[in-house]
Image 1: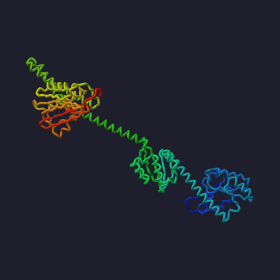
Image 2: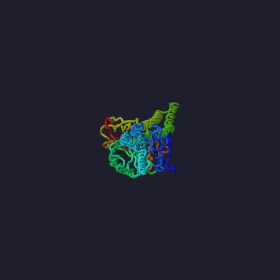
Image 3: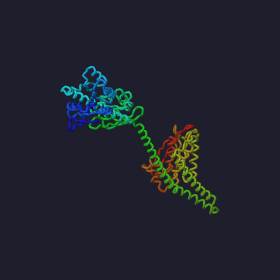
Image 4: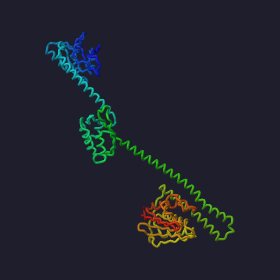
Length: 516
């Protein structure tokens, strides 16, 4: 039977148990102790079984076991309780045995002390019991705090993050195993009571944060204030995030250190993928716009030469016998010119698209630049007989050089085609080729309508059509293609133009190696 008797019924935050085992039926010992214990702090628990005693002993501040003689079976309870590491209070044997030696033998079986059951009710014993209770309270309080600390440590250790805790006086209170592993060199020095800034300097020394002045000052401020959060990188590439959280009731601060290296890598990967997606969408948008512009250009620009070809071909078919030989030659010349114009536009579009997609590459070949400049100029002169194309190669390279033949042909053809289109009547067009050391320059000058100064920087943009080009056929691809080809050839462009006086475009093409 478990009977609890309280010494004082007045309200109190907590009562401390004094366990009594082996009392007689009249509860003589319990009644005596009841009158001797501190008022309003203690309750007497009368224990009737060993199992109950083992349970009560875990929270008791004092335990009394009644021993009738040296042969009493209760003697073994002293050893039973003293071997239980969870029992922290004193275990007192009570006996009426008068023999001093036998009393010592009883005490030696595992009790902390032995009292005479016949001499409990004395003023001196009351003081002794008060002291024993106070010691028991202190031990139980310390035990409880230790258990709470163990639970606290276990809960923190279960977290994948690393923790370090400082008390309200900014002294080190707890370091998790994860934290010690994160700072292996400083682990032994992280002892309880260490000042927060001493801990900071120790940890800083291990990872040499001071090598990065900005990072060191940021970290120092964090540890001085023990507030907020910050991120820092280690020399091995890892990235850590530290965060301060204040404990309830102002009991201190817990610092969480989290390895966010993987998170940062994933974040950078997602950002890269996001940028790639944005670029892809932008390119798709650009491609769609280019396709739209191309369709508009084809439907408009290709119609004219096709109409010319169709019209002249039908005239030749239907009225061939009515035309003189010279008329036939003239008509066929017009058809040839229109076909050449179509070929030029198609070649420009295809080459431009190949450049934009990276499929156009240079193929250096030994080239007689003088011969090529004359050939291309002659081809355009045959198609534009109303213009006088003058060629100057007096300063051109005297020997063959390595250039990309197709690049030279496309650049010259587009420059000449533009000069012819934007020149009035039979205006002269000049072509000049010069040796410029590491470069070969080709200059095409016309006496046409010219380009407004504020538009010159735009003429090499794809599909751009200047204000002076209204009513003049063209795709807006030619000069964009010229610039792309010159850039690919590691060259440069120079433009000089005056409205009403004409335009001069000079391109520099870098001489290539045999295998570029």
